[in-house]
Length: 256
Image (tube, rainbow, N blue to C red; front, side, top):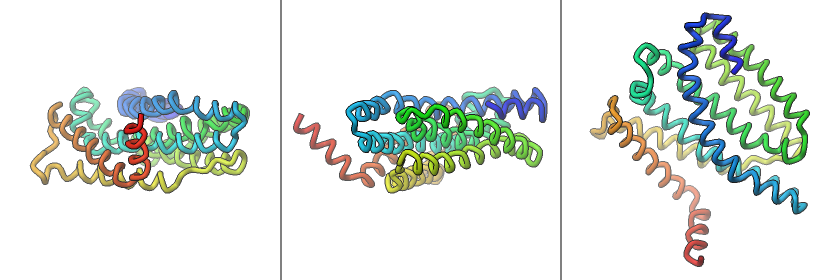
């Protein structure tokens, strides 16, 4: 939340009010998806650690991060694809222009941060390294504030949010390198790429809806149709790109 102080004192309380709407929406959308995975999957890594299966715990954290990305990526990109009608339905008219402008960058920054915090950073808890985790949080706070200030001075409110998103990306990359070298974290890159490919194709499907005779208008019916189509497209692509996992689950259900 350091960006709030930067905008309040670097611009004005009015600018802070305009920021808070889009920033709050972005944080809540990504945090809900992240907490669902963290609450369900982290205990599995703890259980493996308690059994003395350190490599199994590492693998579980890696799998958790892929599952987390699989939820955060489509929810983030999906909202970006329908951001104008989505904002028009949820936000008061005087806040809509600013919210539409900052929401994509706010969503990307929040998604990166939640992927790191509720995915990779579980390694700090698993290997009992709170000091390193606290140090990371201090560095993140300082870098986010600096990047947001530079962005605010160069490109206004949107620049501040862009700066915060870039800071989140830099911290995430540095965090992964550190966790990889110290605790042996290995991200499932092939899973990440397939999830991102599915998300990108889902985004394209949503963007071409108007050309298919389904324009995105400022009503809940239109938004609901878009969300349903996006979900179906994403689910179908995931099934196509992860056939072994899907077939294994179907077999287990068939035998149970």
